[in-house]
Length: 364
Image (cartoon, rainbow, N blue to C red; front, side, top):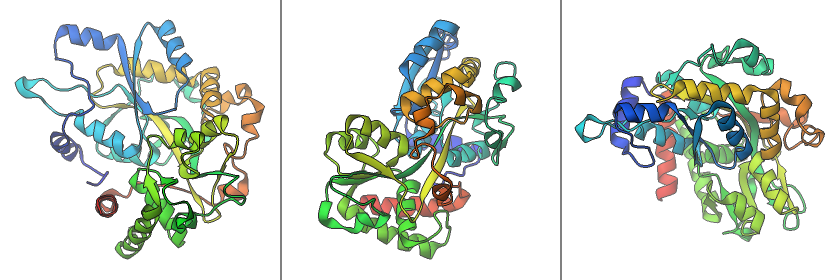
């Protein structure tokens, strides 16, 4: 299924997706009142300072229902499932606040699946805390629908006692450490690793190139599992010696295992922006906007960045971020590394070519 969907197609796909993993609230006055006192926040795993959620509840009086996912693919499926109408006319609720990466964010916008931010709450002075780059995103200039939560890169986390030299993407072709390596369980990120290794554009729509990447990814998969759920812990515990991973995850694992390091391979790596945004059918869009406004406070953005070892798009937060984070090239890469980074783009209908190839790789 392609990520690029019209609003009508989106809702039709939801009926086919099932209702796994969503909340079930009846459309009664009591449920509506309960929803107004709660913000349902769906976010990536290992990606928030719990103290911030407690502080938000204390400040706003709103409880936060917090749920996590492992990939943009899973988030897409959860949002599709949230549109299901149950027997008796009741509809499962969607979520109030979600954090897609920029390519999925663009697809959701194209499907009319996102609500505009409440500018009486997420005000222009608060948005002015963002770095200029994040005020003029191609999909959402002016931040009408989304606010950057964090930015980072995808590369390789590895055990320096096993790999004295930083590995390249071709390491996944080497069966020396078969069974102790992993790739992200996310189709576009996994395909990016294969395409980088082939020297190809990671956003290609050429069927022949995608087919070559499919074959390369099958070879990778012979030596490495697909794992977005536990690879952080597995790296930290030594069960894995190498993994494709997000820089923030690898750095968190390295807190526990100082033998670990992170590298953007010489062939290149992906760069990403994850955005706070509100689904069109959110039960409590006002509460979601209040949580976004809370995050835009520079001290709160800095606290989350320090806890998760990730870069924030909040430029005003810089003076509160610990200097050692600002100086860490794995968080703020130098210019020569930045030049090798590529953002994963939403490819519209052509996403289906990757989806079909991914199914053949994972089911083969």
